[in-house]
Image (cartoon, rainbow, N blue to C red; front, side):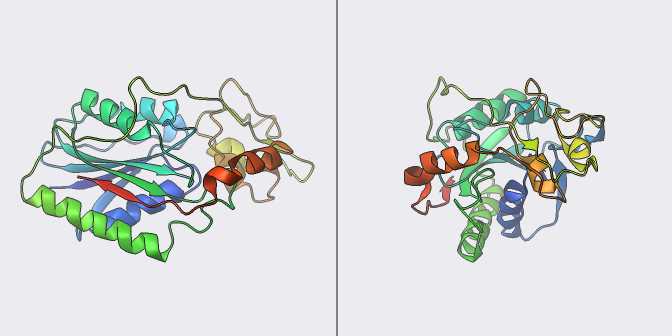
Length: 252
């Protein structure tokens, strides 16, 4: 059995959660990052007896459409999978059931689900530093429980997960742009997974393509990209929703 970590991790939190979870497997795993330029995508070969750990960020209670689109490029071949929804300490709402539906439609057997917290990708003070040491212990423990189920040959076709069908309406934005500190180095354009930033005009942003993932903000060496005054508004709006520490959850 091979273990495949498959993530869409624009700012690194989702990947870190996946890594900690897979530490509990005590087995080596391969890694596939879907949050990259389209021409850099490399899909794993998943065999029927393999295990895939599919981790995605949650945006306004949903998973990014681009992440789902890219995930569908992988052939499931009836393999077992774990779905992991990573959110910024607000709520994951319909993300897990959406991931479950997508994975099943692809041909995966969804044997477990995890909802985990990482630092909020926009308002970084919410969930700051997470996953932290406490999270690391818990996620590794989740991984041990999951791999035990796998090695016992257990399945879970009727896995019940929280969320609604139909899913809630998603939302767009906010769309980050560069300020005067921008050196036009082009790092953001080279890293943007949706191609929303042009190499010829790296200060701008094509809002028709941008998914608001904040990849450009996280990789900018000059810290020149952001959402401006919208950050203060969003921070105030989220304050009562994000102030209490949320717990990681395992569904198995």
